[in-house]
Amino acid sequence: MSATAVTIVTLIVGSCFAAAAVLSVIRIVRGPSLIDRMAASDTLLTVLMCVLIAEMVINGHLHTLPLVVGLAMTASVGTLAVARFASRAGRRKN
Image: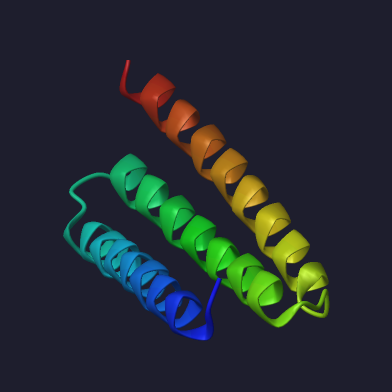
């Protein structure tokens, strides 16, 4: 691939990541429920991880891999915590 093609693909992929991040933030702000906000938060973290992985591939290094692993752990623990909270809140209503 030529340098121009790589630049064009990088811009297109970056634009897609930016659009996904903006839409996730909009869903976090608008809600309406806790589950919607948590799903959007997971999506935003996933987009951030994808951006970091794409940057590693483009620049040919593994320096940010521990950060990606830490973000993945944070996302999974956060999702489990919210799911547990939501299930307990659902039981209290009944």
